[in-house]
Image (cartoon, rainbow, N blue to C red):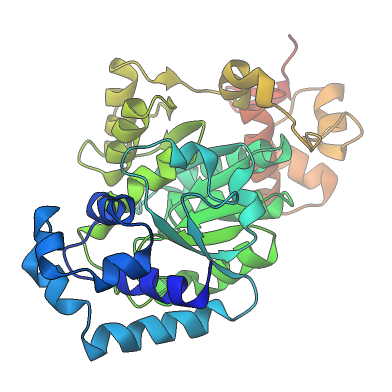
Length: 358
């Protein structure tokens, strides 16, 4: 792409009231973005585009913001992907409303790998956070890229779990990439890039948080993934929007059930009633995706040589007894036991943990 064409695309992308469908209409109506940018206003009106778009394209503000975006793109690991670019996420490109342009920070190769999305409540319980982290570790170890939205709660736990397993994770932002939100996750965002993953957004780089943009970004989270796993969500949660979009896009929808007394479980129960796959272990997800399992990676779930599994093989025991025998903090032992339960290797009955024998 020539410098002039790149600048023209950036200027068009910055125009108010020009969403993905209208922008794509412009790109298809003219031989290139430069031609679209210089076309008369009457040509834009003939395409059904608002007058505000045509009037704003030549303003100093649009030129200045485009120049700043060009400077951002000159930095290492910063890319602008067009739909025709070979690095553009293949599954996302199949959608009618796929973004004509995507800003990416990190390794775009991670966008081409088999991906599973994990979403859920921003106000998740400790149990929900542990489940999200454990599932992300196991799925990343099985070779999947973990996609989510960098939000507090389940999203953050999913990104962190993938990184802890040495896997890759992709964060889709509802802001521009120069406006990381929430700010509490700035370090996590940097870790995602350093871990070989990527941050991406269809929004202008300087776009600040706006409530309307977060549901919009959800179609990208589901659109890049083979399936979406929902962990703790209220019936009004944005996670259910992601799940609905996933179903409309032909993706798999998975949900983890919870206590009938926990408000955060109601959204998941609603999804299950509507046909989502009920998930108790990672195998419930991998069973339907056997063709993608362990691509380029080997599962790293603990083996019988693991001290904790050795203790469980010897005899059932409580988490407290196991922590005492292994001289390890109880919270670490509980976290590993939870992961063993999720991967189907251990079970807990009446407070006693034991090997799950199949």
